[in-house]
Image 1 (cartoon, one colour):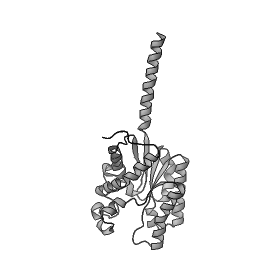
Image 2 (tube, helix red, strand yellow; image 1 turned 135 degrees about the vertical axis):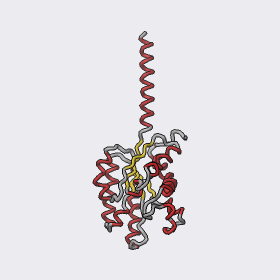
Image 3 (cartoon, helix red, strand yellow; image 1 turned 90 degrees about the vertical axis):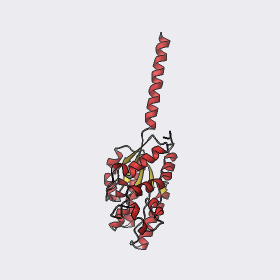
Length: 226
């Protein structure tokens, strides 16, 4: 009788452990922490970068990854710092950090942008949140020396903090346009600044290998393929 009871109890514990393990596998939270380029500005929710990335990851078998949209239109690096503590309360496991271009539009110094991004990265890392850094490029009208320093800043930060690095968040769009800014119109909204649904699709397709590398680096691998 005791043996039968013990066997039933052991089976229940094993099933419970199996369910818990499955739940743990499904709870990797990847937060998108950026500005309007990654927030889904003026797009239906399903067309946004986080939603399309979620779908692309699921199609690759990363069914345990939940993509969180914590991007905000017009966000700067300073603004990101002010809301970082609230974002951390969502308990992300990893973050795709995409900030800096709005600082350029506001004429913020490279030193200040670098300091803010450094603080953001360090704060995430202190909370054991892995960071995938997505860089940007300054617009063609930007003063050349400033533009060069801006691009180099992301690579330097990635090297300093040992981050997986994606150099240019909009690369998918620009490659489709032959790297000609005047040819990007089919992939942009009427404001010629933010990607439309097709532009987001191109962005996701191009950045996806880097996101997979980032996840794999943390021991997160495909579970199944749809």
